[in-house]
Length: 112
Length: 461
Image 1 (spheres, helix red, strand yellow):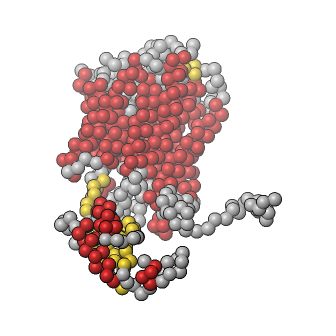
Image 2 (cartoon, helix red, strand yellow; image 1 turned 90 degrees about the vertical axis):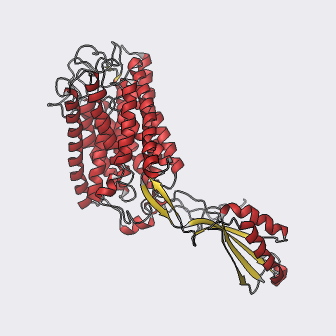
């Protein structure tokens, strides 16, 4: 099993969600995060005083999938999130040792 | 004789001006960081409570009692609002030295007292923006008590107390009356705005900068609040300025129109400066420009024509937009630009009466330089402006030093970093958390002072 973590632009969330549903992903966890990569931040001006905003708002999407689906998840996210401009984000995959569904106690891929 | 129309207008105006203080609280509150929004609101709100009490006890009397000599302070005739019921303001309204409102009919002295109370409330509230995020709440409250007593009440007497205002032999303050200085200040450019701006500067210099000023980003946390607050101020300011005519008549309409046009022009002036200097017109700039225009037209509202008001507004919008940068040049942390907006805007309006004043709108006005008058009035305006500025600044410095070295004025560094809402008020402005059923993480227990809950509570009997 894999955990696919994607950091994407907030406005592509709906597209990413739609793409994941299409390939059969049943659930995901989404959080609002802030950070920067090569995009860096931006500058805001208040009464003439400049503030550099270093951390840009992003959305983190986390999906746990079995090994076969994980590659498709990555492709779906990348395709849905790409605008071709700097700041599109990152996707990474990490191995997951075990998963438990709280309600039933099922373990492993049954719990996904 | 009471004039019912004028009485109504002044009472309504008093309520309008009352709304300005909560409006100001939101104007300021939106500009601070989210960790100190409640403290900012409270610094304003407490002024309603404190000055509302002081005014009845002795404030109104010190400001509007008969002069005790030299036009510096009123007497104690109205202590506890004694000798006020049944008295009429404005019946002596004829002749050269008359009150600046026309007609043989007047308004109840208590209506006038309530209207003026709201000015006394908002003036110390205005100061709070200069020292956002860093002072102990009770020290601030004590400051308001003493500052209102030794600065505002006397200065209000100088500026707003007219000879003959309740009786032919009533004697007023030294700035207002032609027998003494005879400077023009329709609704408080000196007594309210220069006064608050100078006090704000004094406090900032005594208290010092916030931790991290100039390094950490301290951007406004809620600009919609700022714009909403500015709009409430604009609305209430019609009471402030047009109400200062103290009669429902021509002069109130003139002041109303001038208030509108000056504010509109100031918004444009500020935004044009921003477009040229920063490349973008901002929400904060629009709100600030409106307040700058309102401040500047305050002293002039009943003494200039609509085009003069427009000129004053646009000049104030441009100059205040430039003046807010001064704190970075000179290195003082006037958090929300009380100096740049209220001191500078107040000076602009007070001095420009010397240029744009015209007797065509008000026989008690004076023709300024652009209307065939000389420089005499400008000199009087400058004397009044700098007298109030100097008095307020010096007394505030002394008062701030006394508080600083006795009970302490600033919160600890740690409290400042944690957030003053939490350390001074034990509250949080916003709870957007969904953890634990939207109450945030933690548990609750009944207040320590409440009776213990019976063990049967919550069980069915």
